[in-house]
Length: 216
Length: 109
Image (cartoon, rainbow over all chains, first blue to last red):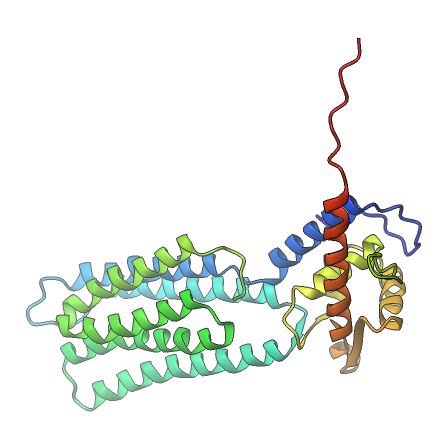
């Protein structure tokens, strides 16, 4: 449905459009196209901020005080899984809506980037399973399980910032890499708390300061 | 068209909206006919007519791909089209600068 400026649905040329009309039409058309065709990264960053803050925070509440560490409880894992699933759904809807009907070079770039990221995330969890089967302790699994997804996400943002030429995405990516690497030193319990605060709040901060409808 | 004159091919509401909408895409991207139609709010027949005029001027390119249910018509701005829209915008700005702001009418009585 056309929500833009009221315009005759006609192919005739007799418009009598003056310069103010033309300027108004240009502005409205640009705003509408940007609203419809550009990804709302603000919404995506807010979603991932809440995923880390609440998801990792819930896991931390579940594991704090464990001696020895034996992993999060089933309720915390369900909360984390549901939040991750919700984040994936929001991503698919937001990105799918923006890029529906858009083809060309950037569409190919997106497919390659998405395939690379999904492969890396699947690889992270396969590797976790392999570590477990190889006899890694619960503590090692805990540190890896919290830090590795942040590392992969940070690398994805840092690399993709080269394509979209955006410093906030680059900064967020580098920050996530630093958080992933340093939070691991906090041990299997502390890594969840550091991830929840440092990654979650960083996402929310970038969401708050970033214009909502910019592609780059 | 002389310098300082608005391009008559673009200076039509529907075509102006088509050009501006396509210009928000990065170079090398295109928009499907159906998504463009949804964005502009024209009937298919009218959209085709306007696109044909823009295509004749060398401002847009339409490309068909696939067949059957996968058939897709992609519409994109050409380099000439982007340059023409830039010129149109510059001329429009000049004209807007020369237009006197409308002062409120004095109250009668």
